[in-house]
Length: 400
Length: 190
Image 1 (tube, helix red, strand yellow):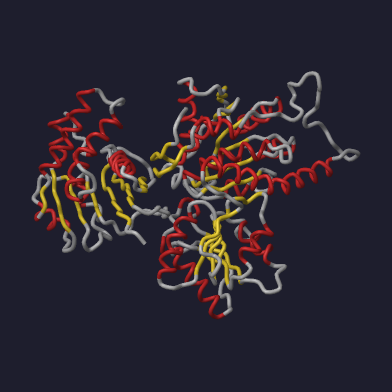
Image 2 (cartoon, rainbow over the protein chains, first blue to last red):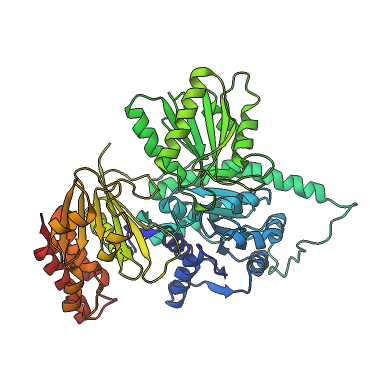
């Protein structure tokens, strides 16, 4: 039996290791920076006979997701990984995967979308897939990427859910940075994920079924969509159940979000992925000076844990939501949801939005400090000068 | 908060700075520390100036931006002294280690700095003598652990043998370990 190991690993290395331990039936492979090292690492495991997985190399991400869909409908446990343009190219297939209620687990390494061409981190890719009915988990570091990947299988395949899951981590910052992480024993992961028990698989030839047929005006399209929405809602309790079970094998506890120094805070930053770590560091620095700041790091973006977020944030005077993506013509996607969620409160915090880190622009300690400075000013005066602003923007002359 | 040791590596693409940053982090991890090692991501071209970072701390590290105020700066290529501000942001009691044949006092003059401590080691010549190739990363590790006391020499050489034992043949492995030892012995401070 293998042992629990503490290792120095990249985020990509940690995800590949989780996939080795999960040992899926099928892995769909198409390379794209900064995700490539995941499928490359896994391919080495496969070539060395460490997994039983059939690695399917395809000619595009569209085909990659199509392959996942076919294999998952047949009854196989299916995984893949992508990033940025790759996720965008899969877009129409993402709806088909979720509409057919296929429990595919995919790792997405967050990266900006062109143009201009940029290979670095932002969340435009996964936020663009926000409405595809995929469950979305976000990971601060390599450890969480590893842990979320293992949990994703159980969440997706739960009979109450049967929806695909996308796990995210920040491109390069986490995918290529070397960090400390703890890997669970192989046997424990194997027992935790178990075998997939497919619901109405295509290969059950004694009980033939049809997947994805026409469902028009006289049919049940709208009821199917309501079912999908209900499954998303049910996923909330399943995500927590899976997290509780995972805590037993790992000692690490997960929920919808992590609250850090939030109870007695007056202001807080809400963010996801690696910026939460840098923010936490600044929370510690400011707390040491007696400034009442806190952090809420969102792990689960779909389904959106609205009620729980309200409870966690309602006592604050001001909240800044950080978005590493922008809905052009509107505001940041996370901001609009957090703000809408808080609207029903009779007394609610002021909520402001900062766009940061697009195309890999570094989110620095100074950026976090500036956001907290603005928040403390809002808390003191009760007035918001700017609801929407950028962090780390260069001053440039713009041709209009 | 516990102090986190922050190291910034300056090198040219192909000199092995990222490997060195990673190796040092692994040595620290083996002694129970939390660690980070990562390059400044950009076009990775052979010969172009690059930066890499290592963080080592007894407490968990939760900071994901580049090192702005390093405690230690390691320069693998002295031609960078004329093109990159390697001492930028160096803490007042910081350490700067340069791969050069010059004396540390001359290096300080070239850097034009008053603060910190300056050390010099000719890592390139050690690499040529021990490995037959001008790859300065392993001797720089030897010099670095000597001046910082970060880890005992024997721990580092045994960790090196463990990490690279499968990748390198015996001659290359021994050459690298000898390079670490020589730099450990020969590094000079002001």
